[in-house]
Image (tube, rainbow, N blue to C red; front, side, top):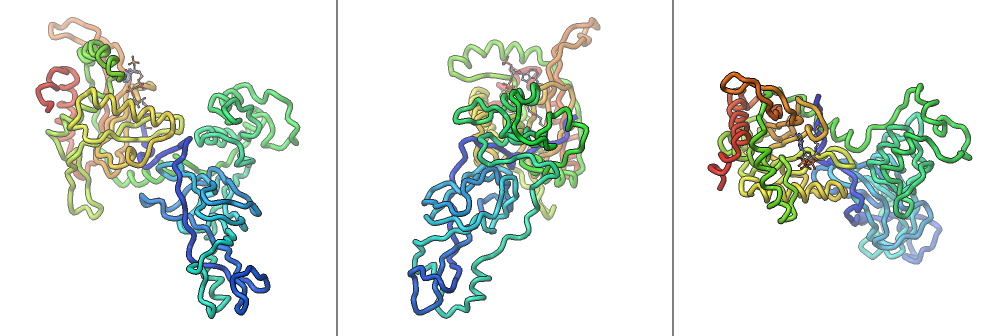
Length: 464
Ligand code: CAO
């Protein structure tokens, strides 16, 4: 049963090549007595230790998970050196320093949740400019307490059974998640990736075959083979995509869902696709069924635009979205994410296929960006690629409708003359926000979608 949709706010994700973000320092310095740092001689001596804040990284993100910490106390860092790598609902971001200096304090460990606006590290920056230095008569104690905001108590990420021992093990968040969920210390997994990176295959092999070498570590619970530890409960922190799903799905429970299942006969579409595959190949495009589903949905949305709308927070207005930005639930190595294809109403089926190929490639590489992951207006999930006939999708707020298609299966059906014939059947399950979508509208939309797919020529008539 399909219950959850992570994260177009992503959602998620591991971006192997993380985007870079420089974070500025607040214009404050901590005053210290007795140490002449060369800034002032007739006033309390300034030791320019600054809290290096996790600044607002946009999209309303309030907290991020720390995936990697690149510095330790005492390290000397230069401008643009990596400080840490964090994962938000939408992307993985490498945070680099804008300043050179010495790291005085590291506020977070791998796995911690860092809060936007709170310090990541404290840094001693000898290159502080005059702007950074407070007025000489600033009371020392007040200055200190104001200038060095302490982070709020951040929930400890240390589970009852420690999972990760070191931020230095190279692995994608997806691999780290598998390690966490299975209580595996990544440091013990033989890595075959470039530069010692632990690949997904490495951890899966490790889980299947167990450690290949005798461990020199003490026989702690953590180091015991999986089979021995399996009988015991494991407590693992909620991280990554699961955090996003908790947020988005909890919000979605406020929405009364209307569900509708329908069968689509796929035989003619299968023929059409087979006939067009060569043309697609010539254009270096992989043409699956999804582009037809996406285009059929867009054509049906033209007739029933309320399914491409959003209800305002105060529930006083409905915004009919002009663009058909159709989200595609995508199973990537980092987990489920929902990038969307923009302006499907303007695209040909081949163009939709090209866009889908691009998004899939980026998803595989963990490189989907905010642009592709936000602004969706309607979602389709093809769970049939994985298996399953029916689903119960949950609307991807603030959208009001989502469809999930199951596997195409050969089934016996009655022909018009009463004979039993084999048909390729695919079920589609719709869920809609019942506050503004009534069942009749959903049913009519579903009929239109079904008609376009069962008679693909009919799409030509309505396409512009
Ligand atoms: N039934 C049978 N075969 C199907 C199918 C279906 N419903 N949908 C696709 N296929 C076929 C494709 O045609 C393709 O076959 P060919 O190689 O012969 O062309 C093959 O399965 C693989 O397709 P694909 O996955 O590469 O591409 P796609 O465009 O069909 O789907 C995507 C793209 C991103 C939707 C899919 O890869 C995916 O990630 N699906 C999972 C979505 C998911 O996890 N949903 C649950 C969300 S809620 O938790």
